[in-house]
Length: 303
Length: 303
Image 1 (cartoon, chains in turn purple, orange):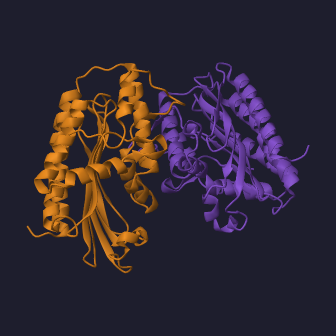
Image 2: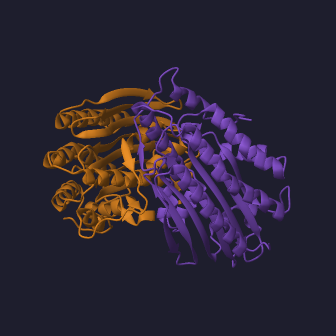
Image 3: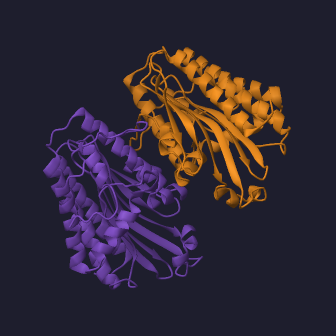
Protein backbone atom coordinates (compact mmCIF):
# COMPACT_ATOMS: atom_id res chain seq x y z
CA UNK A 1 0.00 0.00 0.00
CA UNK A 2 1.20 3.47 -0.81
CA UNK A 3 2.59 5.42 2.12
CA UNK A 4 0.28 8.37 2.64
CA UNK A 5 -0.77 10.12 5.80
CA UNK A 6 -4.29 8.89 5.21
CA UNK A 7 -3.15 5.28 5.02
CA UNK A 8 -1.04 5.64 8.13
CA UNK A 9 -3.99 7.14 10.03
CA UNK A 10 -6.26 4.34 8.84
CA UNK A 11 -3.73 1.78 10.00
CA UNK A 12 -3.54 3.48 13.41
CA UNK A 13 -7.32 3.42 13.81
CA UNK A 14 -7.28 -0.29 13.08
CA UNK A 15 -4.53 -0.71 15.65
CA UNK A 16 -6.61 1.18 18.22
CA UNK A 17 -9.52 -1.18 17.48
CA UNK A 18 -7.39 -4.28 17.88
CA UNK A 19 -5.77 -3.10 21.10
CA UNK A 20 -9.07 -2.12 22.67
CA UNK A 21 -10.61 -5.51 21.81
CA UNK A 22 -7.65 -7.37 23.26
CA UNK A 23 -7.69 -5.27 26.43
CA UNK A 24 -11.44 -5.69 26.92
CA UNK A 25 -11.03 -9.44 26.59
CA UNK A 26 -8.15 -9.43 29.08
CA UNK A 27 -10.03 -7.22 31.51
CA UNK A 28 -13.30 -9.12 31.41
CA UNK A 29 -15.18 -6.50 33.40
CA UNK A 30 -15.30 -3.16 31.60
CA UNK A 31 -15.57 -1.78 28.09
CA UNK A 32 -13.92 1.24 26.54
CA UNK A 33 -16.07 4.35 26.19
CA UNK A 34 -15.46 6.18 22.93
CA UNK A 35 -15.53 9.91 22.30
CA UNK A 36 -14.81 11.67 19.05
CA UNK A 37 -13.47 15.18 19.20
CA UNK A 38 -12.36 17.80 16.73
CA UNK A 39 -9.70 20.43 17.01
CA UNK A 40 -10.41 23.99 15.99
CA UNK A 41 -7.12 24.40 14.15
CA UNK A 42 -7.61 21.14 12.21
CA UNK A 43 -8.17 17.44 12.74
CA UNK A 44 -9.31 15.64 15.84
CA UNK A 45 -9.29 12.30 17.54
CA UNK A 46 -11.04 9.21 18.77
CA UNK A 47 -10.49 8.73 22.47
CA UNK A 48 -11.23 5.38 24.13
CA UNK A 49 -11.19 5.29 27.89
CA UNK A 50 -11.74 2.39 30.28
CA UNK A 51 -12.41 2.63 33.99
CA UNK A 52 -13.22 0.45 36.96
CA UNK A 53 -12.48 -2.73 35.08
CA UNK A 54 -11.63 -6.01 36.78
CA UNK A 55 -8.00 -5.54 35.80
CA UNK A 56 -7.73 -1.95 34.60
CA UNK A 57 -8.62 0.80 37.04
CA UNK A 58 -8.16 3.58 34.52
CA UNK A 59 -6.66 3.85 31.09
CA UNK A 60 -6.86 5.35 27.67
CA UNK A 61 -6.13 4.17 24.15
CA UNK A 62 -6.16 7.45 22.26
CA UNK A 63 -6.03 7.93 18.51
CA UNK A 64 -5.57 11.37 16.99
CA UNK A 65 -4.77 13.01 13.67
CA UNK A 66 -4.24 16.75 13.88
CA UNK A 67 -3.04 19.29 11.38
CA UNK A 68 -2.41 22.99 10.97
CA UNK A 69 0.44 25.46 10.91
CA UNK A 70 3.74 23.85 11.90
CA UNK A 71 4.12 24.53 15.66
CA UNK A 72 6.72 27.07 16.73
CA UNK A 73 8.58 24.76 19.09
CA UNK A 74 9.95 22.86 16.11
CA UNK A 75 11.80 25.93 14.91
CA UNK A 76 13.52 26.18 18.26
CA UNK A 77 15.05 22.72 18.09
CA UNK A 78 18.44 23.50 16.66
CA UNK A 79 19.34 20.12 15.25
CA UNK A 80 16.14 19.90 13.24
CA UNK A 81 15.47 23.54 12.44
CA UNK A 82 16.98 23.16 8.98
CA UNK A 83 14.15 20.78 8.05
CA UNK A 84 11.38 23.06 9.22
CA UNK A 85 9.90 25.76 7.02
CA UNK A 86 8.26 28.72 8.69
CA UNK A 87 5.31 28.77 6.34
CA UNK A 88 4.69 25.04 6.30
CA UNK A 89 1.78 23.07 7.60
CA UNK A 90 1.98 19.78 9.49
CA UNK A 91 0.02 16.58 9.96
CA UNK A 92 0.55 14.47 13.07
CA UNK A 93 -1.17 11.20 13.80
CA UNK A 94 -0.64 8.61 16.47
CA UNK A 95 -1.91 6.22 19.09
CA UNK A 96 -1.09 6.83 22.77
CA UNK A 97 -1.78 4.45 25.60
CA UNK A 98 -1.43 4.56 29.36
CA UNK A 99 -3.01 1.85 31.52
CA UNK A 100 -3.20 1.88 35.32
CA UNK A 101 -4.18 -1.52 36.71
CA UNK A 102 -6.09 -2.22 39.91
CA UNK A 103 -3.72 -4.89 41.25
CA UNK A 104 -0.35 -3.49 42.35
CA UNK A 105 1.30 -6.67 41.05
CA UNK A 106 0.27 -5.77 37.48
CA UNK A 107 2.56 -3.12 35.96
CA UNK A 108 1.54 0.26 34.52
CA UNK A 109 2.27 0.38 30.80
CA UNK A 110 2.68 3.16 28.27
CA UNK A 111 2.89 2.98 24.50
CA UNK A 112 2.95 5.67 21.88
CA UNK A 113 3.54 5.60 18.15
CA UNK A 114 3.32 8.72 16.08
CA UNK A 115 3.86 9.91 12.54
CA UNK A 116 4.63 13.51 11.64
CA UNK A 117 4.93 15.17 8.25
CA UNK A 118 5.20 18.67 6.93
CA UNK A 119 4.07 20.26 3.71
CA UNK A 120 7.72 20.61 2.67
CA UNK A 121 7.99 16.81 2.45
CA UNK A 122 9.91 16.26 5.69
CA UNK A 123 8.46 13.37 7.70
CA UNK A 124 9.39 11.14 10.57
CA UNK A 125 8.23 8.36 12.89
CA UNK A 126 8.47 8.21 16.65
CA UNK A 127 7.34 6.00 19.45
CA UNK A 128 8.10 3.80 22.36
CA UNK A 129 6.84 1.34 24.94
CA UNK A 130 7.88 1.42 28.56
CA UNK A 131 6.83 -0.53 31.62
CA UNK A 132 6.38 0.78 35.16
CA UNK A 133 5.95 -2.09 37.59
CA UNK A 134 4.96 -1.07 41.12
CA UNK A 135 7.05 -4.08 42.10
CA UNK A 136 9.81 -5.02 39.69
CA UNK A 137 9.53 -8.71 38.86
CA UNK A 138 12.77 -9.75 37.10
CA UNK A 139 11.05 -12.52 35.13
CA UNK A 140 8.51 -10.07 33.73
CA UNK A 141 11.19 -7.48 33.07
CA UNK A 142 13.21 -10.02 31.10
CA UNK A 143 10.16 -11.12 29.14
CA UNK A 144 9.23 -7.51 28.36
CA UNK A 145 12.67 -6.50 27.15
CA UNK A 146 13.17 -9.76 25.25
CA UNK A 147 9.94 -9.11 23.33
CA UNK A 148 11.05 -5.58 22.47
CA UNK A 149 14.49 -6.83 21.44
CA UNK A 150 12.89 -9.43 19.18
CA UNK A 151 10.94 -6.74 17.33
CA UNK A 152 13.98 -4.50 17.02
CA UNK A 153 16.30 -7.31 15.90
CA UNK A 154 13.87 -8.39 13.20
CA UNK A 155 14.34 -5.00 11.54
CA UNK A 156 17.72 -3.59 12.49
CA UNK A 157 20.39 -5.04 14.70
CA UNK A 158 21.41 -1.80 16.39
CA UNK A 159 17.93 -0.61 17.26
CA UNK A 160 17.35 -2.40 20.56
CA UNK A 161 20.46 -1.17 22.34
CA UNK A 162 20.09 2.31 20.90
CA UNK A 163 16.39 2.67 21.70
CA UNK A 164 16.68 0.92 25.06
CA UNK A 165 19.26 3.49 26.13
CA UNK A 166 17.05 6.26 24.77
CA UNK A 167 14.18 5.00 26.95
CA UNK A 168 16.45 4.85 30.02
CA UNK A 169 17.44 8.46 29.43
CA UNK A 170 13.97 9.68 28.55
CA UNK A 171 11.87 8.01 31.25
CA UNK A 172 14.01 9.40 34.04
CA UNK A 173 12.82 11.40 37.03
CA UNK A 174 15.79 13.69 37.48
CA UNK A 175 14.78 15.17 40.84
CA UNK A 176 14.30 11.68 42.33
CA UNK A 177 17.34 10.26 40.59
CA UNK A 178 15.32 7.25 39.56
CA UNK A 179 13.87 5.89 36.33
CA UNK A 180 10.08 5.89 35.96
CA UNK A 181 10.10 2.12 35.68
CA UNK A 182 12.18 -0.51 33.92
CA UNK A 183 12.25 1.40 30.65
CA UNK A 184 11.68 -0.25 27.29
CA UNK A 185 12.35 1.38 23.95
CA UNK A 186 12.01 4.99 22.83
CA UNK A 187 12.76 6.51 19.43
CA UNK A 188 12.02 9.69 17.55
CA UNK A 189 12.60 11.31 14.16
CA UNK A 190 13.06 8.01 12.36
CA UNK A 191 13.27 8.51 8.63
CA UNK A 192 15.52 7.64 5.71
CA UNK A 193 18.43 9.46 7.40
CA UNK A 194 18.52 6.58 9.88
CA UNK A 195 19.86 3.08 9.54
CA UNK A 196 17.13 2.09 7.10
CA UNK A 197 14.80 3.50 4.47
CA UNK A 198 11.60 5.20 5.55
CA UNK A 199 9.64 2.17 4.33
CA UNK A 200 11.67 -0.19 6.48
CA UNK A 201 11.39 2.09 9.48
CA UNK A 202 7.65 2.20 8.97
CA UNK A 203 7.52 -1.59 9.04
CA UNK A 204 9.47 -1.59 12.32
CA UNK A 205 7.19 1.09 13.76
CA UNK A 206 4.09 -0.91 12.83
CA UNK A 207 5.52 -3.98 14.50
CA UNK A 208 6.05 -2.02 17.71
CA UNK A 209 2.41 -0.96 17.72
CA UNK A 210 1.18 -4.43 16.79
CA UNK A 211 3.17 -6.09 19.57
CA UNK A 212 1.66 -4.03 22.34
CA UNK A 213 -1.52 -6.01 22.95
CA UNK A 214 0.11 -9.41 23.23
CA UNK A 215 2.89 -8.13 25.49
CA UNK A 216 0.59 -6.42 27.94
CA UNK A 217 -2.10 -9.08 28.00
CA UNK A 218 0.62 -11.62 28.79
CA UNK A 219 1.77 -9.46 31.73
CA UNK A 220 -1.84 -9.18 32.88
CA UNK A 221 -2.31 -12.95 32.70
CA UNK A 222 0.84 -13.56 34.73
CA UNK A 223 -0.07 -11.16 37.53
CA UNK A 224 -3.75 -10.35 37.76
CA UNK A 225 -4.66 -13.03 40.27
CA UNK A 226 -1.74 -12.39 42.60
CA UNK A 227 -2.76 -11.46 46.12
CA UNK A 228 -1.70 -8.21 47.72
CA UNK A 229 -1.88 -6.39 51.03
CA UNK A 230 -3.00 -2.91 52.06
CA UNK A 231 0.64 -1.94 52.24
CA UNK A 232 1.21 -3.13 48.63
CA UNK A 233 -1.74 -0.96 47.65
CA UNK A 234 -0.29 2.04 49.49
CA UNK A 235 3.02 1.54 47.70
CA UNK A 236 1.17 1.46 44.39
CA UNK A 237 -0.33 4.88 45.18
CA UNK A 238 3.12 6.27 45.96
CA UNK A 239 4.55 4.87 42.72
CA UNK A 240 1.66 6.45 40.87
CA UNK A 241 2.64 9.73 42.53
CA UNK A 242 6.04 9.36 40.84
CA UNK A 243 4.29 8.65 37.56
CA UNK A 244 2.39 11.93 37.93
CA UNK A 245 5.65 13.73 38.70
CA UNK A 246 7.27 12.37 35.55
CA UNK A 247 4.32 13.17 33.31
CA UNK A 248 3.76 16.71 34.58
CA UNK A 249 7.40 17.73 35.03
CA UNK A 250 9.30 15.96 32.24
CA UNK A 251 7.17 14.29 29.61
CA UNK A 252 7.62 16.18 26.35
CA UNK A 253 4.31 15.05 24.87
CA UNK A 254 2.44 16.27 27.94
CA UNK A 255 4.33 19.56 28.06
CA UNK A 256 3.76 20.19 24.37
CA UNK A 257 0.09 19.32 24.70
CA UNK A 258 -0.43 21.65 27.66
CA UNK A 259 1.45 24.51 26.01
CA UNK A 260 -0.11 24.12 22.58
CA UNK A 261 -3.70 24.14 23.74
CA UNK A 262 -4.14 20.43 23.06
CA UNK A 263 -7.16 18.45 24.26
CA UNK A 264 -6.42 18.47 28.00
CA UNK A 265 -8.57 15.47 28.90
CA UNK A 266 -6.83 13.31 26.28
CA UNK A 267 -3.40 14.43 27.42
CA UNK A 268 -4.04 13.97 31.13
CA UNK A 269 -5.84 10.64 30.81
CA UNK A 270 -2.36 9.31 31.60
CA UNK A 271 -2.80 10.37 35.24
CA UNK A 272 -4.04 7.69 37.64
CA UNK A 273 -7.44 7.64 39.33
CA UNK A 274 -5.70 7.89 42.71
CA UNK A 275 -2.16 8.80 43.68
CA UNK A 276 -0.44 9.52 46.97
CA UNK A 277 2.47 11.53 48.34
CA UNK A 278 3.88 10.87 51.78
CA UNK A 279 6.49 13.16 53.24
CA UNK A 280 9.92 11.55 53.34
CA UNK A 281 8.66 8.00 52.86
CA UNK A 282 11.39 5.42 53.49
CA UNK A 283 11.32 1.82 52.40
CA UNK A 284 12.16 -0.85 54.97
CA UNK A 285 15.59 -2.47 54.73
CA UNK A 286 15.34 -5.77 52.89
CA UNK A 287 11.77 -5.14 51.67
CA UNK A 288 10.33 -5.74 48.21
CA UNK A 289 9.84 -1.99 47.92
CA UNK A 290 13.52 -1.38 48.56
CA UNK A 291 14.43 -4.02 45.99
CA UNK A 292 12.23 -2.34 43.43
CA UNK A 293 13.83 1.06 44.08
CA UNK A 294 17.28 -0.48 43.66
CA UNK A 295 16.28 -1.52 40.13
CA UNK A 296 14.90 1.85 39.06
CA UNK A 297 18.10 3.04 37.48
CA UNK A 298 19.55 3.44 34.04
CA UNK A 299 21.59 0.77 32.32
CA UNK A 300 20.11 -2.43 33.75
CA UNK A 301 20.52 -5.13 31.08
CA UNK A 302 17.44 -7.30 31.24
CA UNK A 303 18.26 -9.47 28.24
CA UNK B 1 16.86 45.90 65.47
CA UNK B 2 19.40 46.17 62.70
CA UNK B 3 18.37 44.56 59.41
CA UNK B 4 20.76 41.69 58.83
CA UNK B 5 20.17 38.35 57.20
CA UNK B 6 20.80 36.70 60.56
CA UNK B 7 18.10 38.78 62.22
CA UNK B 8 15.65 38.07 59.44
CA UNK B 9 16.31 34.34 59.70
CA UNK B 10 15.88 34.44 63.46
CA UNK B 11 12.59 36.25 63.04
CA UNK B 12 11.45 33.61 60.54
CA UNK B 13 12.29 30.78 62.93
CA UNK B 14 10.23 32.48 65.62
CA UNK B 15 7.39 32.83 63.11
CA UNK B 16 7.63 29.12 62.31
CA UNK B 17 7.38 28.36 66.03
CA UNK B 18 4.35 30.56 66.50
CA UNK B 19 2.54 29.19 63.46
CA UNK B 20 3.17 25.57 64.42
CA UNK B 21 1.90 26.18 67.96
CA UNK B 22 -1.24 27.87 66.68
CA UNK B 23 -1.89 25.09 64.16
CA UNK B 24 -1.36 22.34 66.73
CA UNK B 25 -3.82 24.03 69.03
CA UNK B 26 -6.33 24.39 66.20
CA UNK B 27 -5.86 20.80 65.10
CA UNK B 28 -6.09 19.23 68.52
CA UNK B 29 -5.02 15.80 67.32
CA UNK B 30 -1.53 15.81 65.88
CA UNK B 31 1.83 17.47 66.47
CA UNK B 32 4.41 18.65 63.98
CA UNK B 33 7.44 16.42 63.50
CA UNK B 34 10.66 18.37 63.12
CA UNK B 35 13.64 17.52 60.97
CA UNK B 36 16.78 19.57 60.56
CA UNK B 37 18.67 19.27 57.33
CA UNK B 38 21.76 20.79 55.81
CA UNK B 39 22.58 21.60 52.24
CA UNK B 40 25.90 20.62 50.76
CA UNK B 41 26.40 23.96 49.01
CA UNK B 42 25.59 25.94 52.17
CA UNK B 43 22.86 26.40 54.77
CA UNK B 44 19.94 24.16 55.52
CA UNK B 45 16.52 24.15 57.06
CA UNK B 46 14.13 23.13 59.77
CA UNK B 47 11.19 21.25 58.35
CA UNK B 48 8.02 20.74 60.39
CA UNK B 49 5.46 18.35 59.02
CA UNK B 50 2.07 17.35 60.40
CA UNK B 51 0.00 14.39 59.30
CA UNK B 52 -3.21 12.59 60.16
CA UNK B 53 -4.38 15.34 62.46
CA UNK B 54 -8.02 15.85 63.40
CA UNK B 55 -8.17 18.85 61.06
CA UNK B 56 -4.99 18.66 58.97
CA UNK B 57 -4.44 15.57 56.86
CA UNK B 58 -1.00 16.64 55.68
CA UNK B 59 0.98 19.83 55.79
CA UNK B 60 4.34 21.44 56.22
CA UNK B 61 5.63 24.62 57.81
CA UNK B 62 9.13 24.78 56.41
CA UNK B 63 11.88 27.15 57.40
CA UNK B 64 15.10 27.35 55.41
CA UNK B 65 18.19 29.54 55.05
CA UNK B 66 20.44 28.57 52.18
CA UNK B 67 23.48 30.20 50.66
CA UNK B 68 26.10 29.69 47.97
CA UNK B 69 26.95 30.90 44.51
CA UNK B 70 24.19 33.02 43.00
CA UNK B 71 22.07 30.63 40.90
CA UNK B 72 22.29 30.91 37.14
CA UNK B 73 18.61 31.41 36.52
CA UNK B 74 18.86 34.91 37.96
CA UNK B 75 21.22 35.94 35.18
CA UNK B 76 18.63 34.86 32.65
CA UNK B 77 15.91 37.15 33.95
CA UNK B 78 16.35 40.17 31.74
CA UNK B 79 14.73 42.80 33.90
CA UNK B 80 16.88 41.93 36.89
CA UNK B 81 20.09 40.82 35.24
CA UNK B 82 21.66 44.23 35.79
CA UNK B 83 21.52 43.67 39.53
CA UNK B 84 23.15 40.27 39.45
CA UNK B 85 26.91 39.82 39.50
CA UNK B 86 28.30 36.65 38.02
CA UNK B 87 30.79 36.14 40.85
CA UNK B 88 28.42 36.95 43.68
CA UNK B 89 27.10 34.75 46.42
CA UNK B 90 23.53 34.70 47.73
CA UNK B 91 21.63 34.09 50.93
CA UNK B 92 17.96 33.11 50.80
CA UNK B 93 15.75 32.51 53.80
CA UNK B 94 12.05 31.96 54.15
CA UNK B 95 9.08 30.14 55.57
CA UNK B 96 6.82 28.12 53.27
CA UNK B 97 3.53 26.56 54.22
CA UNK B 98 1.01 24.32 52.51
CA UNK B 99 -1.78 22.69 54.52
CA UNK B 100 -4.21 20.08 53.22
CA UNK B 101 -7.17 19.58 55.57
CA UNK B 102 -9.19 16.40 56.09
CA UNK B 103 -12.60 18.02 55.77
CA UNK B 104 -13.41 19.17 52.21
CA UNK B 105 -15.24 22.17 53.68
CA UNK B 106 -11.95 23.50 55.11
CA UNK B 107 -9.82 25.21 52.43
CA UNK B 108 -6.27 24.37 51.45
CA UNK B 109 -3.93 27.24 52.27
CA UNK B 110 -0.48 28.29 51.12
CA UNK B 111 1.81 30.96 52.49
CA UNK B 112 5.38 31.83 51.67
CA UNK B 113 7.59 34.70 52.72
CA UNK B 114 11.18 34.90 51.60
CA UNK B 115 14.17 37.18 51.78
CA UNK B 116 17.01 37.14 49.25
CA UNK B 117 20.27 39.02 49.25
CA UNK B 118 23.49 38.93 47.25
CA UNK B 119 27.03 39.76 48.19
CA UNK B 120 26.84 42.82 45.92
CA UNK B 121 24.30 44.37 48.29
CA UNK B 122 21.21 43.75 46.18
CA UNK B 123 18.34 42.38 48.28
CA UNK B 124 14.62 41.86 48.05
CA UNK B 125 11.55 40.45 49.77
CA UNK B 126 8.89 38.21 48.31
CA UNK B 127 5.86 36.33 49.47
CA UNK B 128 2.19 35.66 49.32
CA UNK B 129 -0.80 33.92 50.80
CA UNK B 130 -3.46 32.23 48.73
CA UNK B 131 -6.49 30.14 49.54
CA UNK B 132 -7.78 27.10 47.67
CA UNK B 133 -11.23 26.15 48.92
CA UNK B 134 -12.56 22.84 47.61
CA UNK B 135 -15.91 24.61 47.81
CA UNK B 136 -15.81 28.38 47.51
CA UNK B 137 -17.71 29.91 50.41
CA UNK B 138 -18.24 33.60 49.61
CA UNK B 139 -18.31 34.60 53.29
CA UNK B 140 -14.95 32.99 53.89
CA UNK B 141 -13.55 34.43 50.68
CA UNK B 142 -14.60 37.93 51.74
CA UNK B 143 -13.13 37.46 55.19
CA UNK B 144 -9.85 36.15 53.73
CA UNK B 145 -9.42 38.97 51.26
CA UNK B 146 -10.54 41.61 53.77
CA UNK B 147 -7.85 40.44 56.19
CA UNK B 148 -5.20 40.65 53.47
CA UNK B 149 -6.43 44.07 52.40
CA UNK B 150 -6.23 45.29 56.00
CA UNK B 151 -2.57 44.27 56.21
CA UNK B 152 -1.76 45.87 52.86
CA UNK B 153 -3.66 49.08 53.58
CA UNK B 154 -1.86 49.52 56.88
CA UNK B 155 1.41 49.83 54.98
CA UNK B 156 0.70 51.08 51.48
CA UNK B 157 -2.57 51.93 49.83
CA UNK B 158 -1.78 50.49 46.42
CA UNK B 159 -0.46 47.14 47.61
CA UNK B 160 -3.69 45.18 47.94
CA UNK B 161 -4.98 45.77 44.42
CA UNK B 162 -1.52 45.32 42.92
CA UNK B 163 -0.68 42.15 44.83
CA UNK B 164 -4.20 40.71 44.53
CA UNK B 165 -3.91 40.95 40.75
CA UNK B 166 -0.43 39.44 40.91
CA UNK B 167 -1.87 36.46 42.82
CA UNK B 168 -4.69 36.06 40.27
CA UNK B 169 -2.13 35.97 37.48
CA UNK B 170 0.35 33.76 39.31
CA UNK B 171 -1.93 31.09 40.78
CA UNK B 172 -3.47 30.30 37.43
CA UNK B 173 -3.70 26.89 35.79
CA UNK B 174 -3.35 27.91 32.17
CA UNK B 175 -4.23 24.54 30.62
CA UNK B 176 -7.47 24.37 32.66
CA UNK B 177 -8.22 28.06 32.22
CA UNK B 178 -8.98 28.29 35.91
CA UNK B 179 -7.34 29.84 38.96
CA UNK B 180 -5.94 27.48 41.58
CA UNK B 181 -8.34 28.89 44.14
CA UNK B 182 -9.64 32.31 45.15
CA UNK B 183 -6.19 33.87 45.07
CA UNK B 184 -4.93 36.20 47.77
CA UNK B 185 -1.82 38.32 47.49
CA UNK B 186 1.51 37.65 45.79
CA UNK B 187 4.57 39.90 45.56
CA UNK B 188 8.22 39.58 44.67
CA UNK B 189 11.39 41.67 44.47
CA UNK B 190 10.16 44.23 47.01
CA UNK B 191 12.92 46.66 47.92
CA UNK B 192 13.56 50.35 48.10
CA UNK B 193 12.80 50.69 44.36
CA UNK B 194 9.18 50.05 45.25
CA UNK B 195 6.57 52.32 46.80
CA UNK B 196 8.34 52.37 50.15
CA UNK B 197 11.76 52.02 51.74
CA UNK B 198 13.19 48.56 52.34
CA UNK B 199 12.53 49.01 56.06
CA UNK B 200 8.87 49.76 55.48
CA UNK B 201 8.52 46.88 53.05
CA UNK B 202 10.09 44.61 55.64
CA UNK B 203 7.48 45.69 58.18
CA UNK B 204 4.72 44.88 55.67
CA UNK B 205 6.31 41.53 54.90
CA UNK B 206 6.49 40.64 58.59
CA UNK B 207 2.84 41.53 59.04
CA UNK B 208 1.91 39.16 56.20
CA UNK B 209 3.74 36.32 57.93
CA UNK B 210 2.35 37.18 61.33
CA UNK B 211 -1.23 37.29 60.10
CA UNK B 212 -1.19 33.78 58.70
CA UNK B 213 -1.98 31.83 61.87
CA UNK B 214 -4.99 33.86 62.92
CA UNK B 215 -6.45 33.90 59.40
CA UNK B 216 -6.20 30.15 58.89
CA UNK B 217 -7.24 29.12 62.38
CA UNK B 218 -10.34 31.30 61.93
CA UNK B 219 -11.14 29.47 58.68
CA UNK B 220 -10.61 26.16 60.44
CA UNK B 221 -12.93 27.16 63.28
CA UNK B 222 -15.64 28.19 60.85
CA UNK B 223 -15.59 24.98 58.85
CA UNK B 224 -14.04 22.03 60.65
CA UNK B 225 -17.26 20.64 62.08
CA UNK B 226 -19.24 20.91 58.85
CA UNK B 227 -20.63 17.62 57.61
CA UNK B 228 -19.77 16.26 54.20
CA UNK B 229 -20.64 13.39 51.89
CA UNK B 230 -18.59 10.84 49.97
CA UNK B 231 -19.16 12.90 46.88
CA UNK B 232 -17.77 16.03 48.61
CA UNK B 233 -14.73 13.95 49.50
CA UNK B 234 -14.34 12.77 45.90
CA UNK B 235 -14.52 16.38 44.69
CA UNK B 236 -11.82 17.29 47.22
CA UNK B 237 -9.53 14.65 45.67
CA UNK B 238 -10.16 16.06 42.21
CA UNK B 239 -9.42 19.62 43.39
CA UNK B 240 -6.22 18.32 44.94
CA UNK B 241 -5.36 16.87 41.54
CA UNK B 242 -5.54 20.40 40.17
CA UNK B 243 -3.33 21.58 43.03
CA UNK B 244 -0.75 18.98 41.98
CA UNK B 245 -1.02 20.14 38.37
CA UNK B 246 -0.35 23.74 39.36
CA UNK B 247 2.57 22.92 41.62
CA UNK B 248 4.32 20.58 39.21
CA UNK B 249 3.61 22.45 35.98
CA UNK B 250 3.67 26.15 36.91
CA UNK B 251 4.90 26.93 40.41
CA UNK B 252 8.21 28.76 40.10
CA UNK B 253 9.44 27.82 43.55
CA UNK B 254 8.82 24.14 42.85
CA UNK B 255 10.41 24.32 39.39
CA UNK B 256 13.46 26.12 40.74
CA UNK B 257 13.76 23.66 43.61
CA UNK B 258 13.57 20.63 41.33
CA UNK B 259 16.03 22.08 38.83
CA UNK B 260 18.52 23.36 41.39
CA UNK B 261 18.87 20.15 43.32
CA UNK B 262 16.92 21.47 46.29
CA UNK B 263 15.67 19.27 49.11
CA UNK B 264 12.99 17.32 47.24
CA UNK B 265 11.00 16.23 50.28
CA UNK B 266 10.69 19.81 51.51
CA UNK B 267 9.67 21.07 48.09
CA UNK B 268 7.11 18.36 47.44
CA UNK B 269 5.58 18.39 50.92
CA UNK B 270 3.08 20.70 49.19
CA UNK B 271 1.54 17.68 47.43
CA UNK B 272 -1.49 16.11 49.11
CA UNK B 273 -1.62 12.69 50.75
CA UNK B 274 -4.19 11.60 48.18
CA UNK B 275 -5.29 13.12 44.87
CA UNK B 276 -7.49 11.92 42.05
CA UNK B 277 -7.90 12.39 38.31
CA UNK B 278 -11.06 11.32 36.52
CA UNK B 279 -11.25 11.43 32.75
CA UNK B 280 -13.48 14.23 31.52
CA UNK B 281 -15.19 14.82 34.85
CA UNK B 282 -18.22 17.10 34.49
CA UNK B 283 -19.95 18.92 37.32
CA UNK B 284 -23.74 18.69 37.55
CA UNK B 285 -25.74 21.69 36.44
CA UNK B 286 -26.71 23.79 39.45
CA UNK B 287 -24.38 21.92 41.84
CA UNK B 288 -22.07 23.41 44.46
CA UNK B 289 -19.16 22.05 42.44
CA UNK B 290 -20.31 23.96 39.38
CA UNK B 291 -20.69 27.12 41.46
CA UNK B 292 -17.16 26.73 42.76
CA UNK B 293 -15.78 26.32 39.25
CA UNK B 294 -17.59 29.45 38.13
CA UNK B 295 -15.67 31.41 40.79
CA UNK B 296 -12.23 30.06 39.89
CA UNK B 297 -11.36 32.91 37.58
CA UNK B 298 -9.26 36.04 37.65
CA UNK B 299 -10.57 39.41 38.71
CA UNK B 300 -13.26 38.48 41.24
CA UNK B 301 -13.49 41.37 43.71
CA UNK B 302 -14.13 39.84 47.10
CA UNK B 303 -13.88 43.07 49.10
